[in-house]
Length: 83
Image 1 (spheres, helix red, strand yellow):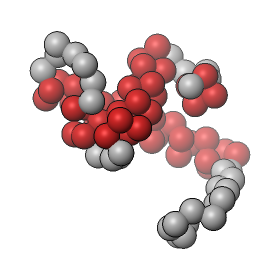
Image 2 (cartoon, helix red, strand yellow; image 1 turned 90 degrees about the vertical axis):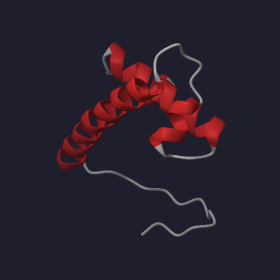
Image 3 (cartoon, one colour; image 1 turned 180 degrees about the vertical axis):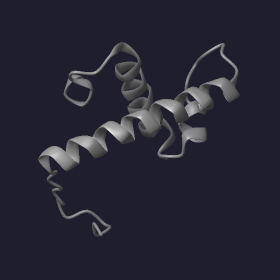
Image 4 (cartoon, one colour; image 1 turned 135 degrees about the vertical axis):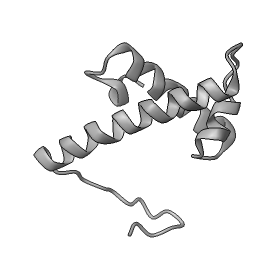
C-alpha cells in the first residue's frame, strides 16, 4: 500500500487503502460496489460522495504526473488486451 500512496496526504492514503480493499472485496471498480464493502457507520451516500471527490482529485494528479514524466504499462499476458 505504501508504494501506491507514497508522497500523498492523509486523505489520499485513506482513499487508496479503501479503494484497493473495496476492489478486492467486491471484484468491481464501480464506486458504489467499492463503497458497499466498507464497514462504516457513515451513510452510504456520503461515502460515495467522498470517494467521488477523492477519485477526481487523484485522477488530476496522475494526469499531471503522466504529462511530466510519462507512464509505463506492462501487460503480463492477461485475458484482456490493453488498448
